[in-house]
Image (cartoon, rainbow, N blue to C red):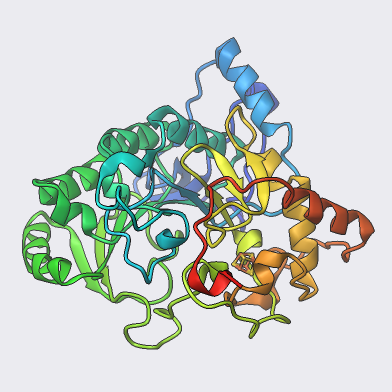
Length: 395
Ligand code: SF4
């Protein structure tokens, strides 16, 4: 009987020179009793690559994207923001720090949307880079369900990368503002979303939730309440073809850590200096891409004060490993919140002992004059989104 090797898969996919620059698939081993052997099969969630010869255009894309393939461990989450801005504009939300509560409040005139091809381009880069432990999170500084082509966007992302977990986080606002949204939720699952989390943000959502639970359960989608930290599921546990809908209480409703209302670096709530000497793991674990492809320091940097560049044009790894990101990590690694944004922020993550990478294999140089200069450069100039000053920022 042939036994499988002890460690059949490798965490990082490797390039195979015989395969004309395509990536080796990640293999699982399956017991075949008739043949009395273990045979390699592609992972149960399906192949994420194609073995045919790549076209010149594809090769150029691979070269451009993988040119920067080194350095920091891949992010656990790449956040894609289909929509910037929100029709509700609750004063307690950070959206009040980027949108006026004035005349255009409640209209769609101030909503920015991501181009479908840009979202697919980001997913294609993740595939090329072989970031197998990364998940896509469709959320951001607006209500994703307000994107008119969201279902198509998800469908194309799934067609490009069949094994990546796709999560969607919504306040549910899109469901009360648009008719037929319940059908759209089902369409999203059909298009390739693996987990949708609805924050029961508003009374209207709580009322609609009963219907949602009933209809989605009938469709064979698992429904779960308040599953815990973050999206409630790690990308290792929830992968295609799994489909799960979770409901989450809004931040601050129970006072637990999971639902703690954060001040979003002073944009959503009063400035806080409580965590000045605490490590923040966000720039080590997440890459938040805004509607226009730009990346700020983290998802709490709503205004884009700390600018890290654009991921369009095959620059995803270049931004992740870029000078502004690395300089910020060097500061945060030694519990220094010299960046103005971080000084005011009350974010502190979990498992900060596992930095800078989950296996604690990397070393990061301590901050010096060079990194301080990079941090200063990243904060120069106007932020990506014009700020609206909050009451506590006036003085
Ligand atoms: S401390 Fe800095 S990096 Fe961490 S969440 Fe706040 S603003 Fe972002």
